[in-house]
Picture 1 (cartoon, protein in one colour):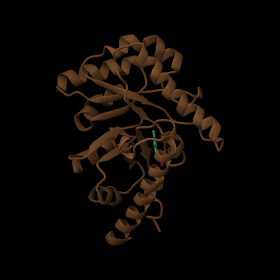
Picture 2: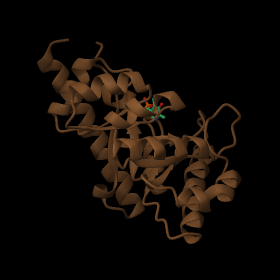
Picture 3: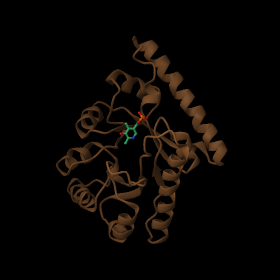
Length: 233
Ligand SMILES: *Cc1c(COP(=O)(O)O)cnc(C)c1O
């Protein structure tokens, strides 16, 4: 696909997404400025990532540290979000290249991030990943577990703890999906009530379910496939 056509397809996809964001915000009585799009580029070819950047997208999400580092080096002026599992031995390169980590799934990992952040003199924004639905295969804290360790975690230095992240299970049942998203919001409200630490961000919603997520309070939506639809034709 030539560059011009690629731009055109991406632009159409973006404008359709923005329209859906507007509509979901209108239904929920929310402002569209409070919903931030993170373009998930893990399966996208480099040309498409760069084209999106030229179209004004500045927040990108990658699930693998290696690819995040490579791409962040190509577009250092964008914000790079790690959204996939982070191993302890990858914390340093990730912190050197990314301002947001959505996938903090243990107290031990948060401590490691805090230590490396102090060494590097950075203050990354971090979100705690929660397995709201209780599905066995998913990473993340269970809500009960998080409530137990919360006070201690909220006091962690050298990181800016800004919110919670979750993924809905793969299902067509929108009630199940909505309950996961409202569950994350309720958990956030409880955690906030029990400390001075505010958690303004809810990272929830992917291509298939972001409108429901917005209706339930998402501030960061992580969209991949719907942005890149049609670019391989
Ligand atoms: C891949 C991925 C996304 C984007 O998924 P799409 O369905 O392609 O929009 C969002 N969040 C996480 C954690 C992912 O791994």
